[in-house]
Amino acid sequence: MKPRHLTDLLLLATIWGSSFLFMRLVVPVFGPAGTAWLRVAGAAALLVPIALWRGEGAALRERAPQLLLVGLTNSALPFLCYAWAVQQLPSNLTAVFNAGTPLYTALLAWLWLGDRLTGWRIAGLVLGFIGVTGLALVKAGLQTGQLDRANALAVAACIAATLMYAHAACYSRSRLKGVPAMAMAAGSQLSATLVLAGPALLTWPAVSATPLQWLLMAVLAFLCSGVAYILYFRLLAQVGATSAASVTFLVPVFAAAWGAAVLGEAVTLPMLVGGGVILVGTVLVLGLWPRRPAA
Image (cartoon, rainbow, N blue to C red; front, top):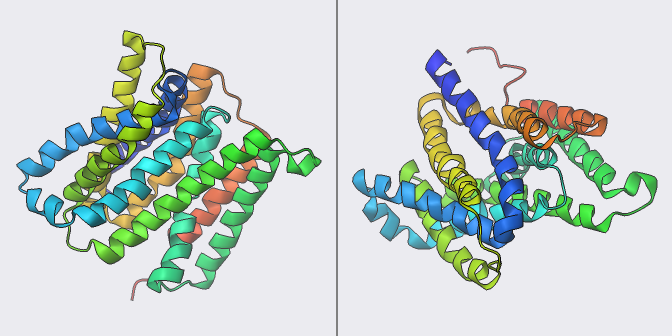
């Protein structure tokens, strides 16, 4: 990986790590549905003109039904789940659960697409799921026998979001081959905007947001979604899917730093242990270690 690619990777991790913080700051103002809708609407406003300028309008029209499903499972519903979850959980913890996305993607790709699971990948899946399950049990209070229903539902929302990300990744591989990456990003955000418009308007809060709160929302939409997609797809094209997916390891680190610096969120021992186990499992699943010897 060249220095400029590493710079893009660190910048993307910083941006995506901050998205959990921004959600926690704006959800009390705009509500979960309003936050998710404004986020995808801002991203669509940035990405659709770029896709059209690149001459990818035909792909947007021809693949509209498939892009609608990707927008639903890769943006609309996951963003709604996380926006709801951050009302109950610290932003850094939601980022740790999000780090399990490659685990679910690998498992679904095996079940759906027939991807081969080596011994190391199976070991990674087992480790990763142990980490997710252990962390979920701790946050839900089940290790003490005292169920915290609100925390349990928030944890379930985070896990549901990662499962939907996994579905979107596998569906895109199987049904959207040959579709330009920018068209896919733009079309999915536009579709998510249409899907979330109704719920957002029906639940729109009566209290007006301040200019600062609108600014925070704009950063979440344009930077954490729009610009982040551009960086991510550029990395995909230049260094490949596996290397680009390594951003998953860095996002919780930056999310923890943002949460501690701005909100004073603590990094607990269960979070460190569970997050560490999840990341080790993800390293194995992605094949970043052990490396196969060159043929």
